[in-house]
Amino acid sequence: MATSAWLHIAFSDLRFELIEMATEGDRSIAHMWMRGTQTGPFTVFPPGGKPVAFPPTDREFAVRQCHVIRFRDGLSAEHIAVRDDLGMMTQLGHLPPTPAALARMTRFQIGGGARRAIAHAIEEAGRAAAAAAAAQPAGAGEASAVPAPQAS
Image (cartoon, rainbow, N blue to C red):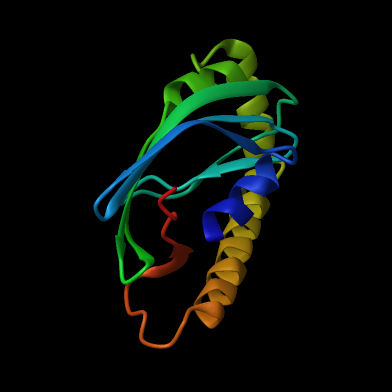
């Protein structure tokens, strides 16, 4: 939920289209398209680094992803995502760092847009995480409230 809230700040029309899904044992894999238009600032949170916000471009993107989810006691216990972040950032016009992209980023930084975008993304993700934690069944521990897919 926190990731969804944070992504919807940047991509107001964000959507995921399932290509295929398979389940075996306690694991499911979902192959999907992620599509959207960057209508708001996009904040990224590099592991061990400071958040970085990219200004809106109003450009569309479409990238494929795979998500592997391991379930325990009917809830999501592990999630691994394989995404095409390079493809998405290229389609959005943030990469490669052209003079136009660098000028757009500089204006966004100097004008305070980046700082405000980062604070807003952190606030929205925190709010969504708190709501998800409050909705989690008692005793679920580390597992999240994403139900296991039902076998057909």
